[in-house]
Length: 469
Image 1 (cartoon, rainbow, N blue to C red):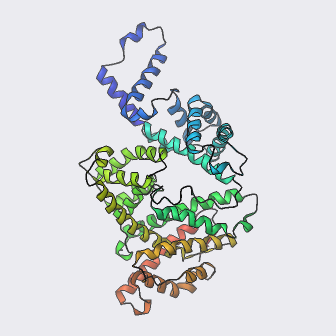
Image 2 (cartoon, helix red, strand yellow; image 1 turned 60 degrees about the horizontal axis):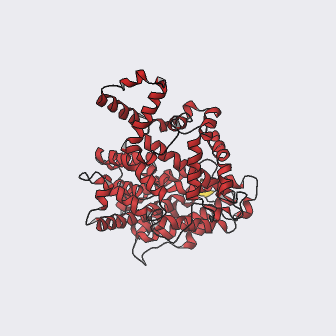
Image 3 (cartoon, one colour; image 1 turned 120 degrees about the vertical axis):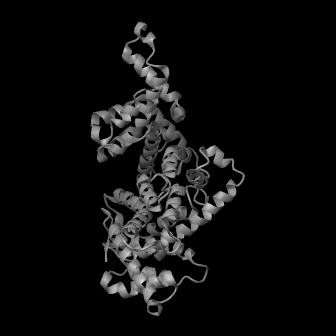
């Protein structure tokens, strides 16, 4: 809210105080002040897309539901407010139209029923978390609104998927799965589809229980978080030690950062952005530009089902160009297509590197029950298919049979160490461990140490049926 305060302060300085006519107004001073605050904020450029808001207290109602101020009464005030109800209705009309597949086999069968149930759905989610994160109070006005819109959409999305009787494991939105530029790189969309298909084959039988929906949601969040866990943990270890990103193919802090920024699945992960931007040592101007324009990117992603990957790339290019200040200027450049294509190719290389890292890290963990074994087998199979793109056709030396066998083995890390060192050598140097030079063997040991640390982080995720070997 500091941004809103700055706007109001500037307005006061410019006008040299509040309007003297208030002294003779028939309205009370509090009403005059309220009207002035609303008019000032909604006329500012940062608030234009929310200027149709009729509830002057919406921002305050949202912030009163942050953890520091949380109470059931505050939540009730927010969710029962006219503006919140209008926002919910608009999101349902846009993202959950009557022909949406989520209504098939669902107790919520149409948009009207979803609108009626939304307040209860949102209340229980907010009550479970005891409020929004306190960091919302540090956001500017547009970011609070943008994040609030996204929160509503995702909570309704999760509820509809978890209550849909389709006998599949929901791992993300798979609508329009063949559009390779929709919702990020086509590899990301393929991850969602592939993991859904693999996990849905046989895993349902061991998940018939009262907690089935909860397990599905946990698996969904876990799978999408894996690349972030792997990249941030590896970055941390490399930053703290004497190792470099040369240990891994196609990866460095800057490429990882641009991959994150250009990927609609992860571009709103502010924690990962801050962490990677420090490691990449990018200019402060780039950081400020990205954070300033992120709410606009999120708004565009929210309002369009097409070309989401293109939009994210354009905002990434904007952040890294010190001579351009608006997204319109970037999109108007004569060589914009060339710039996007260059970034896309670089991101595809990074993408393969990220999933190679995930593949190797997952070799250091094992399933703690039948669900975990099936989950690990599906993950390793999927990561294998993407990781092989890191080398030219015909030069990938691992097999699907190997990773399937590995997923079903409960051997300890000590017992598989020799085999794991050989797998790392085959992936990194396309050679057996025994045939490597002393320097390259030392590098394999360094990679092994980093992978074990990533695996430990993965296995420590609460309520996920995986454990370290």
